[in-house]
Image (cartoon, rainbow, N blue to C red; front, top):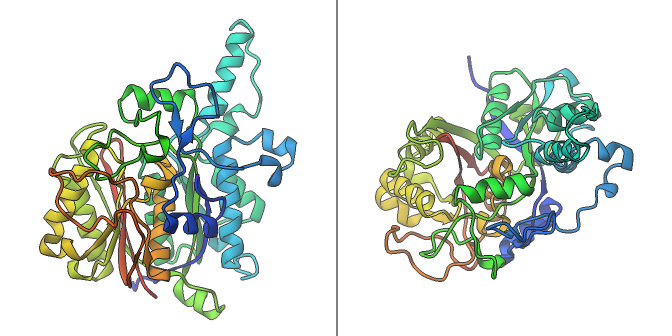
Length: 415
């Protein structure tokens, strides 16, 4: 069976540095940090008091009050970004058979705020009479976001969620590619959303010593590949792509951003939170993505890294790059957009895939900001420190790795 080719025809984003794709991309190129003191709750007694929250997001701009109150923030964010991507692709006007259009989602945490608020309300009521909202479960479960999107648009193709921690939406993109390649769908709305800037999210990650505690200087707290990096900054938001079978997209005259040529999925088999110290799983994921694309190692121009700003994680990923690419590693434009957006957990793979796609589409690589001191323990590569790079990008990888040792590398090519 000949595999179908897959192209990207729509993009949507809601991030800490922009409430749509255009503003997010502009902020990335300008090196804008989305980090600031937490406003979602009072963080006075928390080790970490900073996060990358959305700016100027008003639920009532997108939902009526009654509907919005029934949706956890992670679902709201996902639906807003999906609306943008679907409109960008002209998917509704394309008049596809709705049974051939699916929604595949990635989410690691789900409705943590809804769950937390319900428990707090239960305790305030004395913890005796179980008075819970009938919308509690539907607001918490991770699969509800693709469910809402499919209901809104009447899409009846494949519809489910993938959960692989911070690799969740990256894995969702892999599954969407397979659905189209194998002729199970003509188009897939795929992405991820997360809204974990809550007491549980901040407290839990801080207890693991995964978060930066540079509370006095939040905008420079996310420092991928810097000697003094001390953890990631938690972010929130959503990223969405519309993927289509190439011939269908061409036949309707769709705008095509890039082609999705392959992916690699692996496990570290090493530790519940720490990556393999040599980046073994990351290296194999990138190798498989290149092989799946029918390309060569020397074809890779750019890698949007997982680049979380953790001491161990950045070292493992750069080791993987050097071990796989050898001398060609010196010629690859490497960056971490998490230095600006923070870590969007389950949504990170989709948001960073969008950044890689736009690098191909526009011939520009966003910078890795907040570099102050070289780390002698890391290989000296082109990390795109400080300033966006204007350079042609024909073939790019986007990496996402998750707790549990989950690794995904996505490959995109100029169309």
